[in-house]
Length: 198
Image 1 (spheres, helix red, strand yellow):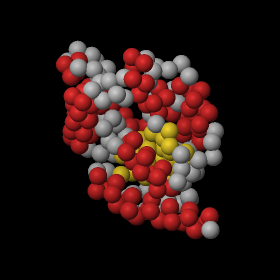
Image 2 (cartoon, helix red, strand yellow):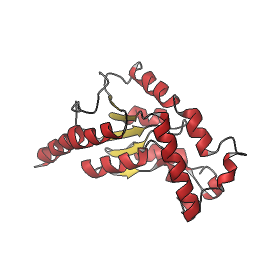
Image 3 (cartoon, helix red, strand yellow):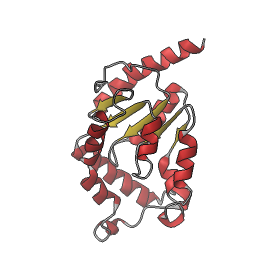
Image 4 (cartoon, one colour):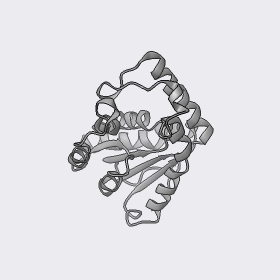
């Protein structure tokens, strides 16, 4: 199946949708929008992964396996331990392939806002002090910088792999393309879904 762009109609009604991109690309925001537009349940993987004090929840993989068996869902494609499982069940993959400067600006602003507001995230966690970007090699800002190109490598692997013939892969580069896809192909897919229910 060819790689789709922001104006290309989806070849089938999306029922199990993954959204991928580096940290700060807008995965969660777009996943929420897709779920609302298509009337599908959404699962935020960060909420399943992070336990108190940022420790991984031991039930994470079992929880993902449970929801992935469902007939319809939207989720982010992240966490290496469950990526194959999610990909096996997905029918649509949306790739947010934004420039590094865009995602870094977003992730810096988001991290700073969360820290200054002491925003409570998953299971009572809050962002660590901003100075830890200098001392923690796994700090989100450093991770976002290092991992930027890896998403593209993963998606290209999908396009060359066993799932390529059945999986619709949409590549969106920059926010304008995201908006074009939301108001075009995604909206039309939602309308077709509504018509099929009538």
